Image (tube, rainbow, N blue to C red):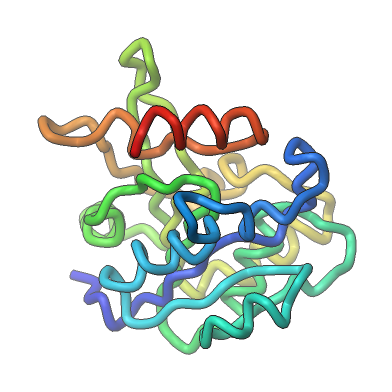
Length: 205
């Protein structure tokens, strides 16, 4: 079984924020705290260490006292580029990524992804959770990756690949279901626009 100290947690906050009117989503306020800081605090107890994937406002993120890892390229290649940067810098065997815009991700995310990867003997595991109709949907940004996947990911990005799921499935990925009794239906809800941020903050104190 993969132990917490074997995992580095990485908060992905390196996007353009296109649907947030260009704002740095990780620095948007969630009940008085930046979204990325909230994600760090939620992730920290689950893993051996944490870091942030960011491409803007690096001094602001660095002031939080955690490593800041930027994409190798300057073209905002999406979450996979953040994952590759994480694999390049992390000193642990495993990397767990979460987006900065999902404030309710499970407190046992690392444990359950580690169980799935161990059971399947897979180098990758990502979450799968029910949508509003109850259909299980992949949540591939919530992803546990082994260091051995780095060469394949680097090649995939070099060839123009940008979607997580097709690449992960090429590696024989495992999935962890988050539809147990007691699992929150909001666990993987994410924030894409200023309006969604305001609505979610108003709905959930």
